[in-house]
Image (cartoon, rainbow, N blue to C red):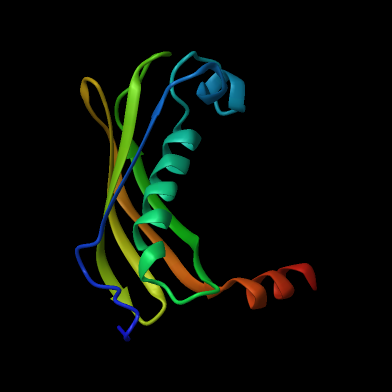
Length: 130
């Protein structure tokens, strides 16, 4: 891409324990006491964000622009979950990740996630001007 050091193959990993505040019934995404899809996606995004952060220029970051993830297995309260990401595409400022989420029993979600590299100050100024 450029001299920032970004390269295909960068991997990320973040984990959490499913607590009451991460349950579908408590985040408004369902009525059941299982790990919310929205919270799984947030964990995936966090893994992607932190995986590339060390390779960006000062003042740069990324914002999520597309998520295409299936949530294929329910996870109960108290179980450990983790998300893994791999940078598989770089197109100028667009970054594409292959993503997967797991709990202690196995795969719970997988798909793709896109992020764009932004300049924090410029991005925030534009957002605040609307």
